[in-house]
Image (cartoon, rainbow, N blue to C red; front, side, top):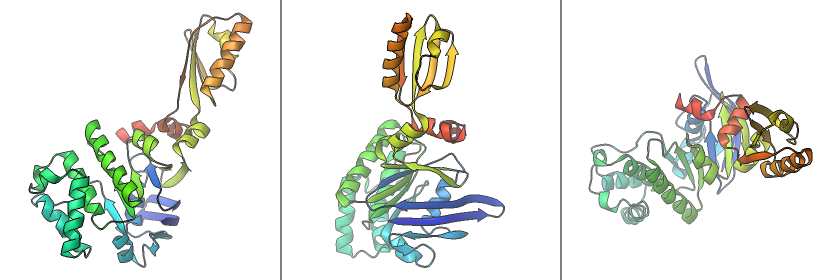
Length: 309
């Protein structure tokens, strides 16, 4: 569905994207993560034909983004960071206008708009002006506008930013249901690591305009971060040497903390070794890694902190 090779984008002396290569198969849900300024949105804008790459190539939905931008646009949906609907227009008018832009005949447009209004719970809002909608309602409208022509590929650029947890969950429930119904491919950028962790089949991490990791969330966490374990013991220095495969080991007061490949196995082995040495462990915990731990392992800094900045 997407085949990009060595994509770059320069804005004067600023190298926003520095050679991104990306292959996305039909039906995948891929999350693109990175701090602000990493090149995520610039990459999305190149793949959706909104800006031309400085160099490199990309085919999206079977068409070249430079040579055939119109063919690409006919086949994709795009929900950008800002709201796409006119504030003084009614919800129903915006949906029908979008359908007309994509060449749907009136009968087909009515059917499709009606289906999306029902699927995205917009029925009570169709006569309202966009300016009268809440943030969550506007994002559902944006998604409906991006899906009105039934694309096989949907780009979502931070679709849930600014929404409260309930509205985020509601929006994703609608998106995932529509994806299942229409076998869509979805590419999204997000600052919410839990979204990428729980829903994406692949996670692509971008930093300084380059892809620095590309795999399933589980594989990235297992390979690049590992579990963290913590033990409380009256003799922490003696216990520290017993934690198998420990890296990033620290001793604070009576607590020994370390990163290991398999947390539960490391705890079991440490408890056995401590018993044999006559050491008493009063508490033991394991912490599963997050995608932020992966980014920290790759770059030495926290993705959460960078995105907050």
